Amino acid sequence: MLEQLIKFFVVFFVVVEPISLIPLFAGLTQGASEDYKKKMAGKAAAIALIICVLFALVGAKFLDIMGISLSSFRIAGGTLLFLIALEMVFARTSGTKSTMPEKEEAKTRDDISVFPLAFPFIAGPGALATILLTSGELWGKPLPFVAFLGVVFAVMFVCWVLMLATPRLMNVFGVTGANVMSRLSGVILAALAVQFIIDGIRGSFLSS
Image (tube, rainbow, N blue to C red):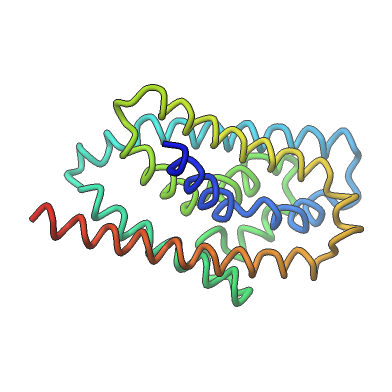
């Protein structure tokens, strides 16, 4: 159980990319008051947490209703995570988190907590796929499932703390430092994504 939770924490942390929130949050809140920054950081983390918890509670049941096996979702989720990893490594944007028009729209909005912070940057497709892959295995096991939700809360808490500390962290890391850390995380995520695909293919053959 502990090994599974650690693995989920590493994957979920890398997929959410809390470090990448630093330059993003700095850009979206440039020139804003401290109260505004604190309010947006708190709302974004809370809304992202609610989205993740709801997806963990009903995601597996939704797959059952749709007739989609967990192995199939592992393959699809692993593929999506691999694409996100490629974006992180090569610093490219393919739209798995948000499109350029959406980013431009966000700059003119008064409330940036729901869009684009909570979704799609924090609780994005990759994060939700990771949650569903793990929650499907833990469904019906109360204690492991509660511990799993605790890990989700921990990552959201880290996101909140980093957004609050963005001004100080930008002085330390800068945009270049944040990009370097993002690329290193992408390599780790790529390997874990391939493992998800392999597990999905193996599960499909064993169940057939």
